[in-house]
Length: 256
Image (cartoon, rainbow, N blue to C red; front, side):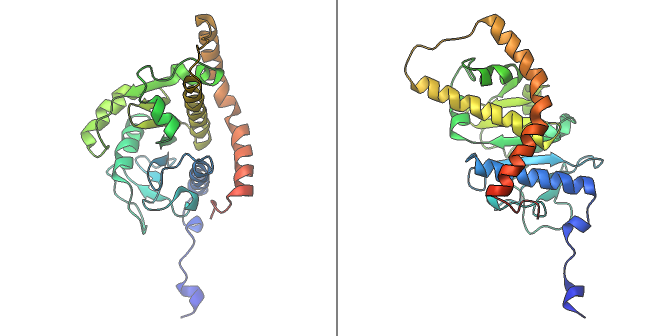
């Protein structure tokens, strides 16, 4: 028997074009999180629902750094947390709890991102949550839900409370824990998370200045919130194309 015969078939040849496209985008999102310094060793997670495959979604192999993740390495799991197909890795139990909670009830959530960044977690420990301090915050502030911290998310009984708190919002601050964003596609979720993380960084910097803060009027808050609701989806594709070009220059290999 030849070596060629023994060679394991590439995953790209074993899945649909639709699944492969999502795998590539999801792997890119992991690499971008690493590139922006939002990762937390092997912890936190990003998931993507598979089209026409109800109950199955992709998530990171537990033990790989985000900068290492490729399209082929992503693990497919079902709503019970069981691995579907072959994988040399398990998945993060806490990651399964949080992401399965969202995917179970939000069928519009094609992608879910959860992070533990210093700025995002800092704002998630401030009693007022995200303040209306700047344009970036105003664009997304009305889309944010809040969920109380219950310990490391290993208890599946937390899922109904997380689902209730999330409701129909696309962003969440998990008190004392971190940030969460979702969207119909990977690119939509990533752009929403970018705005949330950026707003948190701006808030931490503003409060660190120890100066009196200037707040916009209520009318401007309302106008900007509406502009954000209508505007972010319209630019996510343009931003994503630019992000992939950046990734191809600085951290290629995600599409393997």
